[in-house]
Length: 333
Figure 1 (cartoon, one colour):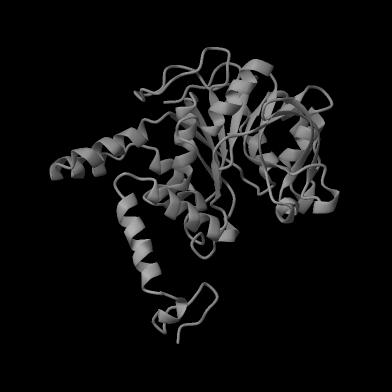
Figure 2: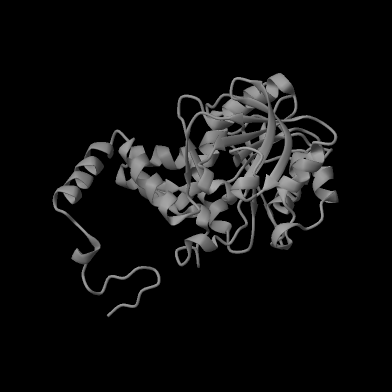
């Protein structure tokens, strides 16, 4: 079970038997996962299930992020959820009935996997009772984080680089610079207006000091092509900035606005991570992630490649689909 320390921080007792690397005392150990959104970009699939629980190949989207956190040495996870999201907590909890069933069936491989998921890390959950934005969701986690630096993962983004996870790259920068670090990626000119963009000065290979941040600027007014992606390492002072940040775009408390305030008090860096990002909050990004991650699997890759080759060779097109099959906005005949 998770312990709450006297100062409100997560108790840093050893996690369940995960066998994962742990970071030294005094460094980042806690990862916050804001998972309270409604997932409107993925409707109707998310009408009755959390978007974070949509399967990418054969495991939920949020599991990819938590496994990245654990592989980076973070062993305490805070889930910020909302009403109707208990499936996320259940997925990372013990399931005695399922384990007994798998034992009776002799499915030792899946039994080990189910137990591994339940023992990935110490996981706590807290509710965001009002939909007041990403910044507010991070602020809700404050009692579980306390006065220590922490990581933030946006579950919509899978960043795939098994040899050296994106968060591990950011944590190395934090350990050297001892200040907040944001993951960034260069984006095409025509996509700049979709992202928060940073103005920077060079600080090293792939590393930049942040001078300013602009939320979704027109491409011709953007200070760079470096876009903020869904991984952060933040100092605890950002909580004070969040408390002082008024609602911004969409009437929500924006994390970007709070980090801009933080710039007035301490340096913030950004790092061009190495890895492939999939925006699984969009339908095309989700489909690409499913296909490419399946192709990367030893147990599925060859079969999926043959499937795609068969489709290409057959000249398959949407016209070949049965008449009653429709898109998300179509009407069955």
